[in-house]
Length: 212
Image 1 (cartoon, one colour):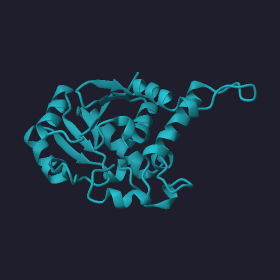
Image 2 (spheres, rainbow, N blue to C red):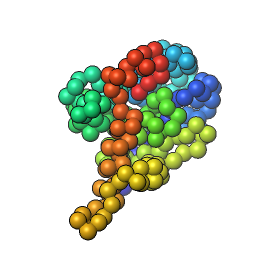
Image 3 (cartoon, helix red, strand yellow):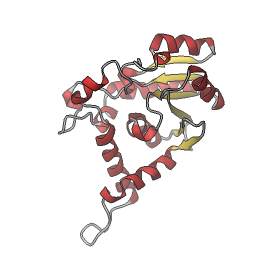
Image 4 (cartoon, rainbow, N blue to C red):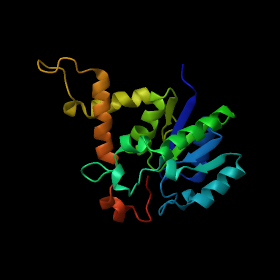
């Protein structure tokens, strides 16, 4: 049985009122900001102080988990051979595990949280393959709120991920007949990591912009 439901959401360029509508539509009473830098150059309504005050006025708690769940890490020990942040390495850090424990404590107290980043599409964001994948493996039921107000289960998006990378995934063959769907999903997550993972080379583009 799943431990509990955890939602995710991307603020994108939504007006604050539209963002609030999505949260209320899905019963969210706690927003966990997973952006490393909680600011938006083009959508200042999502700068940390403004967003926190707006949510508080509407009886929604705001928490920033940038250190725990953010995607930008300058520690090269958390990078892969190409210099991108390796999500599996981040998942093994004390900060990440502390974030999971803190979130779980909030859920046990009755909060109904949503992990928030900038990207509207979870398949373009680290919240899908770094955070949600880990939570799903640990028994949480993760649901992704889409920009149009609909919701997709994590399992739905895993299937979309498999389709996206179908030509690059390992397939059973005469030499490796025992490749499973789980092996393919793990490979798809790594490919997604390569697609969205942060690296210092992206820093110049990310400065003062919207980011993970």
